[in-house]
Image 1 (cartoon, rainbow, N blue to C red):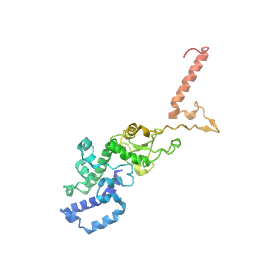
Image 2 (cartoon, helix red, strand yellow):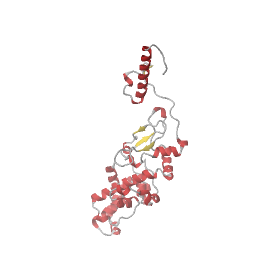
Image 3 (cartoon, rainbow, N blue to C red):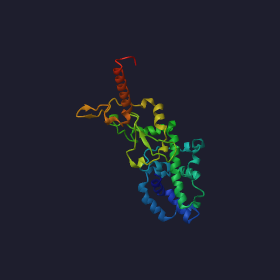
Image 4 (cartoon, rainbow, N blue to C red):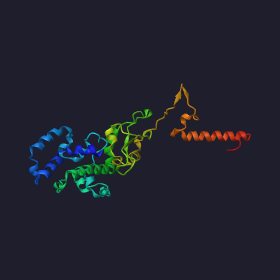
Length: 279
C-alpha cells in the first residue's frame, strides 16, 4: 500500500526538515536549527530503525514493518543508469524519486507543494520496488535473498506434507499495480498469500515473475524433493469413488475423471460389440 508508506515516509527526519525548509526558510542550514522539529524527531525516533541513523533511505525503507521481504539494493547498482532503463516512463517525478532513494539533496524541493512531496515519496517507494525486482535476479541480489530464504523470512508453506518448507516471494505480473505479492513453495509448487496482511499488500511487481524460478535453476541443490505423500479424502475410512459428484468440479481430479469416463465408455462399446478388439 502506498497510503501506509506515505505516512511512514513523512515521519522520516530528513523529509521533516525539507518540508520545514520549504515552508519557512530558503536556507536549509537555518531550518536544521528549529527546535520544534528536533522535538518531533526525538518522538519519532522510536519508530525508526537503528540502521537509519546513518541517513540511508534504503535501510530505513527495508526496516519498516511489512517490508521484510525486501533486501537492501546496493547503491552502486542503482547509480548505474543501465540498470534503470525504462523505469523513468513508469514512475512519476522520476528524478526526484531517484534522488530521494539515493539520499541526494533536492535543489528545487522548496518549489514542491505538500501534495507533490507526497507523490514523490510514493514514487520513491515504487521506483525502489521496481529496481529491487531487477536486482534480486543478479548474483548479488540472489545472495541477499538467500539469507532471508534460509531464515524463512518469507514464511513457510502451509501445505501439511511440505513440512514447513520455506517459500520464496513472486509476482503474477512484472508491471506495477496489477497484483499483490504471493509466495511460491519450491516443494509442492503451490502459490499462496503471505501470512502477514502488511506483506500481502506489497505490489507483486517489486519481486517479479522470474525470481523464485531463476533462483532455483541457478542453485539446483536448493530444490527440495516433492512431497511423497498425497492426501486422500475418505468417508468412514473408505476412499471416495472418482466417479462421485464429489470430484465433478475438483480441478486437480477433473482430468482423471475425464480419463475414467473415456475408459468406461470404451469398455461399454467393446462389450456391446462382443469383445476386446485392439485399442
